[in-house]
Amino acid sequence: MDSIRYNVGKEETDGAIGRPETFEDAQIRGLVESSVKGDIEAYGELYGIYLDRIYRYIYYQIGNKAAAEDLTEEVFLKAWGAIGRYKWKGQPFTSWLYRIAHNHLVDYYRTRRQHEDLQLQENILADDTSIEEEVEGKATRQQILEAISSLPELQQQVVIMKFIDDLDNREIEQIIGKSQGAIRVLQTRALATLRQRLNGVD
Image 1 (cartoon, rainbow, N blue to C red):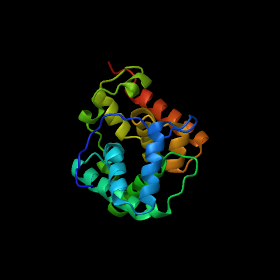
Image 2 (cartoon, rainbow, N blue to C red; image 1 turned 180 degrees about the vertical axis):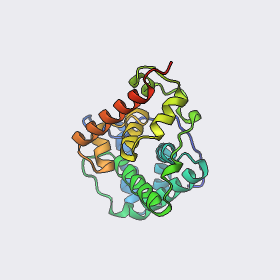
Image 3 (spheres, rainbow, N blue to C red; image 1 turned 45 degrees about the horizontal axis):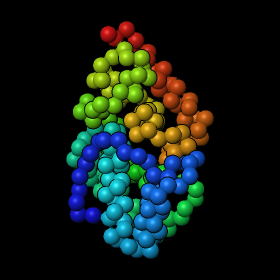
């Protein structure tokens, strides 16, 4: 785990729920099973596969590069400490990892009270236009980012996971502990708020 890189490009999710296991899924399962048995090299491979994804998830929510890097490393250390108790329960390994990241962020906010630091930076969005499409192209990316950062925390998380990380509602349910119905409500309210705040913007 000595090669650290941070990237915000999109990647495919492993073992997406509702589809047959692929060769890549089987490879991930093998790495996880070896890691559960204490194989640090196998866990290092998982670290390399998921580092960018977890970093991006954290960075979108705190808007601070150095803090996001530190928190990302802490998440992987926590995951390594807990992986011996990991069991396959019909969900992808990413959902378990995101759940650890989510809980770590909750602890971070609780102890440091830095909700006001939720600033999303334009360079993170890069070529991602899905949120712009959701708000009907009424605003620039910077205006959309500012609007997202002002949403309540759970709405912000759902928007980020749904439209930036491309997670489905079942995966989000496993991460934030809310039902799929509640997630749909959060998503609907978030998009309605974004449309309202961006209404009339050229």
